[in-house]
Image (cartoon, rainbow, N blue to C red; front, side, top):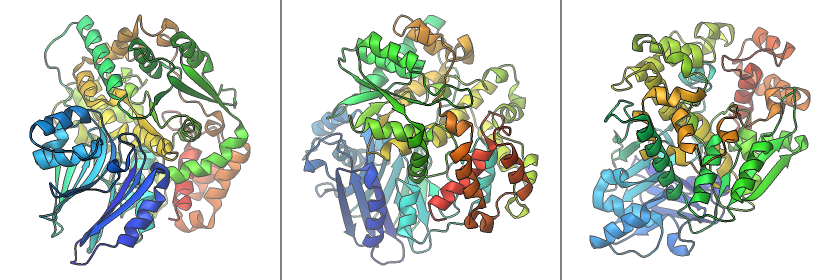
Length: 590
């Protein structure tokens, strides 16, 4: 929901409202229903609105609340805003709208920085105190909603997307070499606060940042699951707790003043959401599935399963078949919608799916996050018998794209670091308190880092490119805390997500629960050939790529000679990984 932007001037001058307007305009797809700009002395805020809650002009942003002296912009949804509004009303607050944005402003006035502890939802926000001049930025616990920041000696700017900051101008677009090493090693993930550009950071998840008028900043991390065992429960008790937790999470995400649909892949996760909504009495629920033409002997759809679920629960189902002729042009749009380079081949699938779905509904629930939260990936079982002391090496072996030593044969010398940045990051993360076992440590880093900067970011960027809001019940923070405390063996059972599969028995058809795990298939991207291979060649041979000189010529020649032969440890195309980086940099004028 929406896109926000802003500037805080640090040199005594007035905020550059024109720059904020440029940043805001870039985010029109995120908020096609309205635009707003507010400026007062050293601070300016911009907003693009997607109307989901309180469809009237009373919910417009930037929202100025003169009674409490707070102005703010907000992206996301507070699912418990009605309960919070009643709590605040009982304490004497008066409301002029029925929006969750106003609840956020008044919650901040009542509880200060602790307001985030009261929120159940996804959010990124910027608040300005009229009397003190202090600016507060905040981001939700799982980083579902993004917030990017750039700073120089005279000002701080922030926005929901990185391209918006570029539109504002004055950003250092040199590559961050540590981020580049993460991208090439850590499964194409750049952990916060870094981005691939030296001049742009992202506010980490579960973080509140205070910007004082003199430019000093303070960060507060307000949430971190510790992945340790609390009270002991039997297997059946865990199953019941997970089922009830997911029921609550799904129900929370139906809060809207517009219809809510579901992205139905046909896998367990999205099927479970549909089943629970049907159980709760939802009738005529709109569901959406997408499929592509096969390539390289690989099927491009999972319609047999999504059709089964749609028929079983009587949904208003939309089966979307994408002709390959639409795929290539859509790549340009998908790359343009990326705030950071995203290698996963299913990005374009989400982009095209979102385009189609946005013609029917404004809000959808999606099954993202279940694999990271409930141990559904195939790299978790090999870690089960590893001692905590060997956790870092074992995790790097199963998850990293390649070792630090291999980068010397890939990157040009000027882009190499003298240390293994990716392994150092994992070692520091694994050394934090908590995470009793190696599997716990892997799930903690995956659910708080990898998940945020791969699947979650992918879904946000691609859905919001078409003014579609995606809600992810598996990332309800109460459910994530429950899953973190659940013993690893219960999650690893039954080939992964064991406790979730047990919770689904009798609700979701067994054919779906027991099927082989599937992925969002886009065969034409996984098996580069024809026009897709030509696109890659053009990007890597473009003058900008030649001038940048990121990769060794012999490495690129090796990839080009056998495009499908060279895979990362997890089976992704090495050629697509390097080409996507160049395509993104060139597409954003870097």
